[in-house]
Length: 256
Image (cartoon, rainbow, N blue to C red; front, side):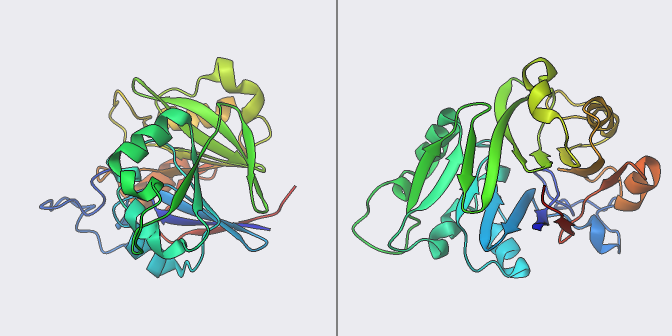
């Protein structure tokens, strides 16, 4: 059994947005309160997080994360990265492996250089960068992953497949001609869908829905959602095939 916890499902602003009094930001529905997007994946004692945004410390406390075997990064934008310093509590004598493309890891190490050096004192994260090629497969403990490249505007970023699940956020082009073989047989697709209005670097809900249909995904969870649309409205419009994920949602997926 693989357990997926949505640590956050919001866009770069989070919800509520500072100073905003729109219906979603003032909603009483807890599913409309969104930290920045991230997930925790657990299987047979292995724990992996994808992305560490601004609220990573709060997310880890809320979900009771006590150890990590690795961290995967989709890209180096701040809303997916800036909680990295709080990885310090998960590192000791052994460095914590962090995985992404060589380019993303280089950008991350330029923002947090001390986390990738052998420092003479404690109190800093001790991280080991592990570069993964596009379409490369790798294992973290009992979890197996494949890195799937997608476009985020003009940037190539990383999505990840694990078993019959895939996590692809901040996507504007699925690069089907490159990825078709790697996107077959997905039962659970977690995909970024920003809003209804078109955006140059993010899918709309409809674009994400159509991408899921194209690869014949079994079921779809939208993530990386902004404050233009409520949880209930998204799910009403796109169910039963697709629905909005929300913070603290837990999925338990039977393994292959």
